[in-house]
Image (cartoon, rainbow, N blue to C red):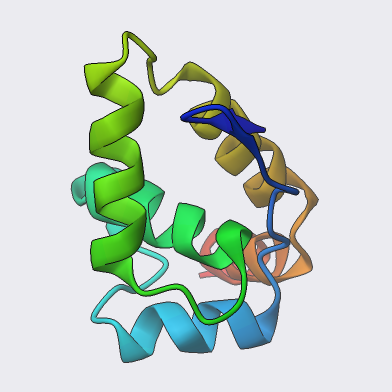
Length: 97
């Protein structure tokens, strides 16, 4: 995905990635209720090198200020959720209840 003229490989939403999200105050359930926080942290994960959420937010601000939109990162996150065994497992558990 390209954000602010820089290309990043979309992060996979693995167990480790979700642990990092929880360390930053987000849970799986927050994807619908706090989508901007989730997108920002997802970009931080995709940027790699232990990028913090403030740096990712600044990158998104610059991207939007330059006329960009959130479509590409939103699509990348959607694809990551669909491909994630972590989310499939959570969905299966929810359906079983």
